[in-house]
Length: 424
Image (cartoon, rainbow, N blue to C red):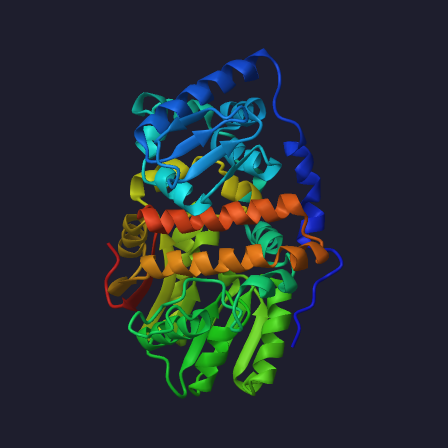
């Protein structure tokens, strides 16, 4: 089965944004901001195991040529963007080709491990004064949530098929490091799904709710156990391919997939599962999300999530910050912290943690494999209509995410809850 692409892809809809990075900021204020950004980068390079190269051959930082190197091709444009727009400008400058790296994930890992080096504490305290105002896309009302999901997941099934494995699973795998052929991505994805279904107690006859269908692999594997699966998504493209895959797998009679918001659900289920969907819920709606899970799971049932987390202090800062990831990759998204999830579930629901299992190292490897395949498919992606700017944007997104897990800045958990507590 070959995934189809739509004529009106999200890359066509978003191509108008490329005009925002065609020209770097200019003027006296931008020049001053650029000089400040250049000084901060030189300061960071002196303290990190990285190298910085300029077009005239000047090299700053460590002498070891094997260390990650950042090559700035257009210094004036690069520093003007970073000075004016901060980390959004940093990402846009990569999209524009202002800089490249000999080892992008390793470079970003060093940056992610050293936030205090990049931005001195004195300047971090001024961050609220420089926050870019959140656009309307950050408020995940039901209608806006559907638009936000479409902006990423409806890019086209063909795009994702180019770099995902045969399971079409777009979340962290779980690798068996004892096997000599490790890492096998498809096997790792199946192992991840099976572990989550085990944690949720899914077996023959189970009534299962899946929030966030993806392209259907979890629903298919749950149905293969004899479970009856109700799966919801806000992505039209994902729903259509997931339905086809369930039919091909011979489990369509036990898998019901529909376009629906989690807030519109009724009924009770033996197990509620959701893989890396909470990241799209939005900070304001986290209590609503967990209260909905509590309402939908039967007494004695289980809720099993796979959730990416970030440090609590960074989450508190990020909830009021408009980021490059939110602007170009996941509009409306925000990663929760462990503390936030525990606090919300204990204050607002009867859900209590019964198990947590980290896949941090596995996600770094998953992202490495995705990025390598994405880069290998450059010509095919271009034929699908995804231009150089889009491809640089996604290369940065995949490398940035990999760096987050390798540095320990990000984590990801399979997190199991039971409705056993009392509300405080």
